[in-house]
Image (cartoon, rainbow, N blue to C red; front, side, top):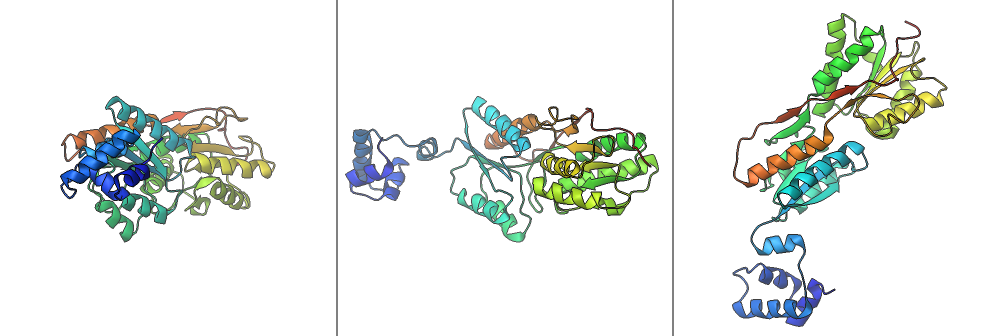
Length: 334
């Protein structure tokens, strides 16, 4: 199959000139355009979806940048966005920053050339350089799951505070007084909202919150494993733990089992974010399920509405669902 370099070689021009000629840009002479198009036709060269869109002065690509595509939550968001985009005859570019702010900045700046018609992003960066890069994005923008500091754009999220408050309230109603929380980074608004719900649940129950039982800044399995080991080393140890997300929960489960403890006899486990693994382990894990697929669809819809010229679009806040399984029980000791 012929590529752009083959067209450039046959037409006697650079690959950049091929791109500009196929876009029908005024900077390329009529004769050169004709030569390039003749070479492309002779070789059977078909530009990518992105190139075809750009040559027509528009893009039919929506982007989704997420912190960790391995996380099932973001995989479901991606599926929802892709399905809604396909209904409108748009394609998707989905990529991960791997929780690396520098890579995230690079991704944002590298797509500022009009390749994307719109971008949905869950950010990990919060510094001035990242904010400037995101503000420089000319295409429609939607934030997913959490707010980016200093960025004015519609946000699609779950009601984190309410969901956490109600779920932790269940633990308190069972008689737990030493409930730990493995939270996320302090500068994530999702972490502050879930921690706020955790605090409000204690206030609702008239129970003091033990600050030493709260661990901040953890992400992923390794973070959950480390934080859970720290909590289990306390005397007395917590009787329940509330985990910021699904991967932290997996790490916490590994630490609990490595310590020879049983769930929920020795410690109850509550997860924010469900995953297909949780109903299959023994015991099945109680989780707050976010409507990840619907969040992706809503994000795509907000992008499409902006592309159609709508402005000042509101945030979309979707409800979460507590899925009760067998990982919660009254404490064996006070």
